[in-house]
Length: 338
Image (tube, rainbow, N blue to C red; front, side, top):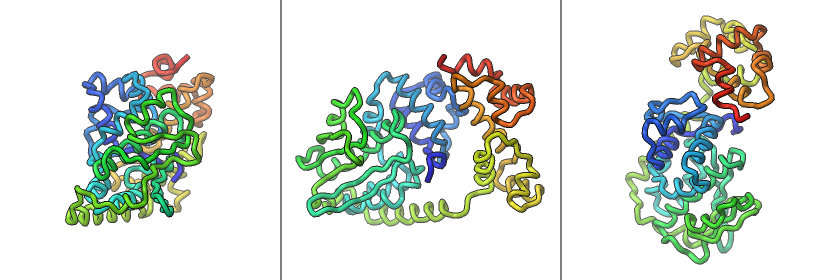
């Protein structure tokens, strides 16, 4: 899975807003610079792309004034926020079962963090491979993942184990002294991989919250979701990927249909069945590219219009106003750090 394919459940942003106690005005500030509204956070089983999530995390860090927000949020994030996978983890017979489930089904939560279990003679390690760059946003989610995992671990073995340690594949941030407070273990920075290391025997320790019936139901649901996820992409996804991988070319519906060896009528029917249209998909992708390009300080409205494939800048200005309700220049003035 590439960074472009990484997505995040809106449940994470919803719980992040709740963690900070944000009212409607606060949620608007949290979502500033995205195409989301507070109502979108109420939708179940909805995902947002990595670029949108990055904007939200940076807004959250600014609103909170707390650089260790990822640790704090993760420590308070209930396993239920992870959907069926969270239920499977919580009801697993042992810690080893729980982390094996995470290793197998991590893509159900968007694939931004992948788990890999490693067994040695004297310890068991869960390696966390982040699917996004370890900048402030990637570190935020890495901290949250670790804090959530350690919190669940603490429910099984207690919040202190002399042999437990956390290794991190990045340099110590300015607030590094807070890591042991939230992760309840020595934290070693600058290591080759990010991982939680525990004594081997603890992986077999029974989970006091284990429930065989709940575990079986959650396992079946996760298997079903994984099967559905691995089916061929929807036509909406195929069309969006084609447009995204050919920047600077404004495709017509006929051209896209021809690329897929379909008639335009057949493609439009497929998209209608997915409750969308070609115009909607094209506008959404062009709007995404335009927004990101206009945030770059050395880009002009004219250069962005040309890079998207518009021959006339005036046509781009009209399209942008239709997408965002403001002109490109007004967008720059409100959102670009100059």
